[in-house]
Image (tube, rainbow, N blue to C red):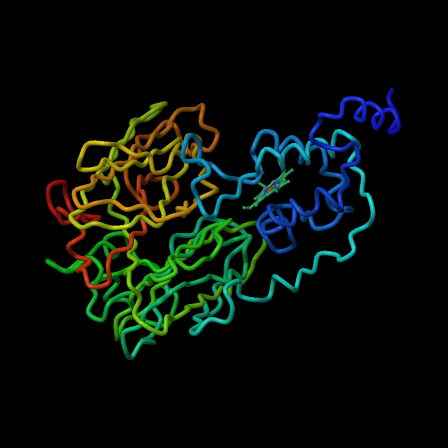
Length: 439
Ligand code: HEC
């Protein structure tokens, strides 16, 4: 067996190696964990164990080495040529992986104890983007210890006497272990979206009611997604000079999906809204219309392919992409086909994981000229070989329970503020609940 000394001599003799023998927790490994892991691995967050001190990390050293070498951790599913094109990239660099792996191999030494211990309160009790201008709080939703919950909705009474521009929004999630996702929408003053439902209380709504829409209603007058929260989401302003508009008389609608987790809890999550002082140069929009409402996955099908496309009638800049499927989702690719026929891959998620509904935020928004066709291709595994498949013996179609399926590539787009957002679509998008060929 080589002792420490021998290792040192060995490394000195073969001096070309990138790392010294003395890789220590405090000096080398902790800075990586602090940057890349503790957002989830700390008390109250979604990861099962905190990794905020040497004592907490040490028993996990071998598991950590394995998790980072296989890139299971941090969770980040984009791959191929798009893998590192995103502003919110969580993945480790090769150097970070090498440091962690070497540290474990050498016995996971602490080194000098950390000078300043991790302070939970310093990050936990504050909004990440600073004090919001408007805060909306879920008025206590009781989540039972077990069972399946359908989506819940909360429509807030009118908060907006005049038009405002929102430069960022942030969810502060209260009960992280049970919140599967929460979306917040701005609903225009005469919107048909959930039109008959009461305000100020938490309600359920049928899929038919949610899809009900007035003929000829403008897409973004009906609703505009402000922000979606899912585990691992990091809040950030969309663009330095871009904002989403909330029109006078709008409400905010929360769509909340809770997954009971063994313990009864009451959730008081909050939405923070940050206003821009002046009108921005770009209007940011969110759309959910790059989707395949007609997917029909046969029972047992190991690789069902579903395709969706839409054409842009206006030039836009692409801000983010979020592939969305449920438990049979296996992989998705989203690409742009430019008017000149050239194709560009926007995101590729070859091994989709339902537990990580990542929004991929482009490092630099990408210009998509008018006439660009957006395409997404989704693969589903409805076979017995898919461990998260709830039931391989049934055919599956569109629906919002996780036992149904979806294929949506959510997109955030920016366009010059003076352009009409409704002119974005080359053909009016088909709405949920309408037969093929109708809008
Ligand atoms: C976005 C949230 C998130 C981040 C960031 C994250 N983890 Fe995790 N981690 C989880 C969750 C949730 C689990 C438990 C479920 C699972 O295994 O997927 C987990 C599980 C683990 C496990 C147990 C693995 C296993 O095979 O069961 C290890 C080890 C781990 N994480 C290490 C790390 C390290 C090291 C980092 C940083 C380099 C990191 N994680 C970053 C959320 C995260």
